Each structure stands twice: as structure tokens, then as C-alpha cells.
Length: 287
Image 1 (tube, helix red, strand yellow):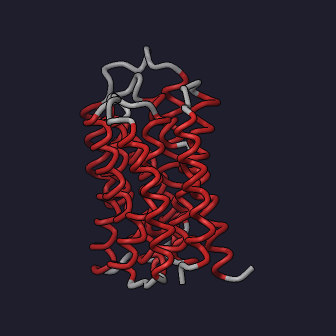
Image 2: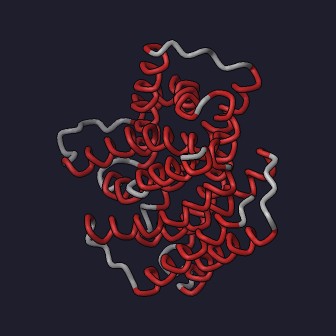
């Protein structure tokens, strides 16, 4: 398998792992405060990341790399988890997952600005088509579910796209799994202190589903998924592999319906199928 093909495979594995993030978060915020969930998942993942870096004797990042790692940390360690956790207090995971269809466009735009990539003009047509389907669905719903929740999701998409692009660019020199590990370690002191400050008074009333949700977003969403994702972005290109995120709504909606028994409307399914059709076209004209 060539480098580009390996990049698409790694990216697909990462997307599959990320697809469980919003349903798991939705379960966790039923019993955990969103702020605690955000800092706790980062603290747990950060402790594991620190152990990995020390055990495998990885080199320290340079000063310039540290600046990029701060951007990654603010985008994917703090910004996206916090904004989605807040949004999921007022919207269902099935509704919020549809907004993930906007991530490929945000990632591609930041990939051009930060990574210097230059996709063909036709690529942007497919990218815009997929994102327009998602935005059109949100407008068709009149944002009746929760305007605040939808705005929080849009904010999450922007900071996440920046974090993805910056991390993908940095992975070319630092390594895919090293990027997320160092970003988590940079945020660890603050996240650890905040976790202790905002933790529940007692964990006795916390049910197993909420604990499993916390465990999933800490180990898989915050750490393991990024091992594959950043490696895929660095191998296959940020803008190109980033279009795999168009598959995430489909996988996420399936999980929301199967595990949480949340209603999935025909409109949601239609939008998901439409954005999936844009992946092949975007892949073809990404370079």
C-alpha cells in the first residue's frame, strides 16, 4: 500500500473511533457536569500520554513545535470537547452529529492556510456540496431544537478543524501519536487541577453507562483515535483525508440509534447519505 492509501486507511480508523464520541458524551453528561467531563477526559488521557512518552523515550518538542502544540491543545483537547459537552445538554447526539459534516470543510480550509496544500478547484465543489447539505438540514429544522446548542456545535467545528489541520501539519515532523500525546501533556497540569476542583462531591450515584462514556471519550476519543487520525492526515494530506469526516455522521447516527435509542429522522439519513457521496469526488480531486 502506498503512502496515500495508508493515510486514507489510518484516517478511516480514526473517524470510526471518533464516531462514538458524541453518543458517549451524550450518555456521560446525563450524570457528569460538562466542564468536569471536559477536564477529566483530558486529564485521564494526559496521564496515559505522559506515561507513553516517558516509556518510549520520545524527544522533547522544539520551541516552534510547542507553539503549534498549544494550538492543537486549545482546539482538540479543550475547545471541541467543552463546546460539544455544553451543546449536548440541549440537543440530542443524533442532531449534533449532523454538524460533524461541516468538519471536512473547516479542516480543508485550515489545511490550506496552515499546511500550504492546494487542492484542485473541483475538490472545493464536492467539499462545499457535502457541507451545504449539512447546513441546509440545520436550517430546514429552523434551529428549533436549541439555537444555543447549534451555535455551540458550530463553534466546536471551527476550533476542531484548526486543531486537526495544525496537528496534521505538525505530525509530518513530530509524528502522529506524539502530537496528541504532547498536546495532552501540555494541558495536563491545568486539566488535572481543574478535575480535582470541579469533580462531583460523590461518585456513588454515578451509573455505569456514564462511567463507560467517560472512559470511552478519555481513552479512545481523546487519545487512540488521534494516533490514527493525525498519522492519516500527515500521510494522505490534510484536505484530502479530512473528507473522511463526511462518513462520521453516518457512523454516529447508527450508534445513536442502536445504543441510545434516539430517534433518527428520514431527513437525517438523507443528509448523511448525501454527504457520503461527496467523499469519492473530493478524494479524486484532492491533489
